[in-house]
Length: 218
Image (cartoon, rainbow, N blue to C red; front, side, top):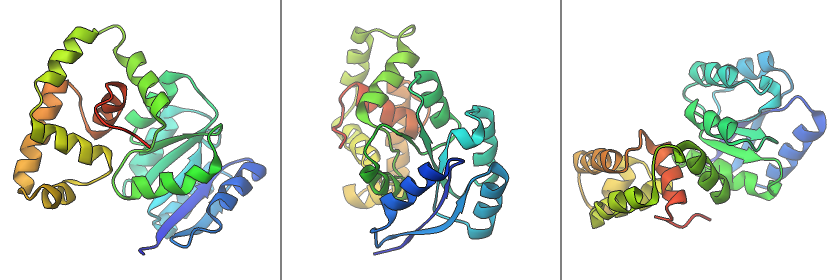
């Protein structure tokens, strides 16, 4: 089992303890550093180059521009944002900034290792209800159900398979191997899916798939 290196950052000692405890018994997850200030977390990520950074929104003063700047500086590390906020603009904004997951504090901490593993494998972590609400918030003024039915109906069976594998966290190379097709063919299918469903990227596709029940999330 390949070890996943993690840095955790939270400006509240009790919350930091909770994050640490959630991973204490996970043999495949190793915490390299813990931080309580924004400056220290950037240094920690630069020094340790972890696979995943678990960072609270509070340590970034709940500012999306600060999150975007952080992700730009540590682009090789996948970021999961831990937050108490429920407003859809902030949750969707965090993903748009490049975060690979949003973990709300009301969720069981036992799910944190699951979130870490999923984003490490190339997936996006978000609870299905939150995904549905985010998509509804983003599209409520622009799209209607009948239009979505037409879009989904235009997908080929192979494109649906590609969507399912993306939502399971697979990268293009893994999808090619699973479906016994070339990387170029995977890219072709993905481009077609983006165009038909009018989504911009993998994150948008996962959110859309949750809302439209194209796949079943755990």
